[in-house]
Image (cartoon, rainbow, N blue to C red; front, side):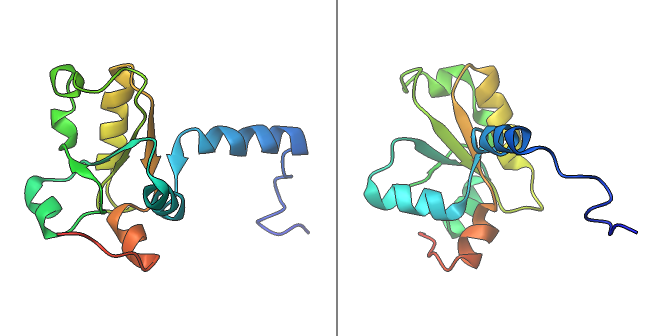
Length: 129
């Protein structure tokens, strides 16, 4: 009898490659963001948490725009091709997703930094205050 893992057969290799490539179009992990920040990022990193939480500690180089304030007039200072990466507190928080939705609805290219602050700390990276 197959295990709970193999009870549903894995997708064929072509479908799996498409699926995993597509998922990377929507997200980046903390290691990739950290590496890109060290090299000079080609995106704008947005901490979508409250200003108070941002002040307590945030990813170095991130700007603070709470997800509810991601509106066209606020984003007009960035050229339309600018790539944004959003994050929030961590996997238990959906603020990064909410911010990404708002940016996508404004026609802005966006990814989510999976793990958020929790993932950043778990990887051993320092926060800035």
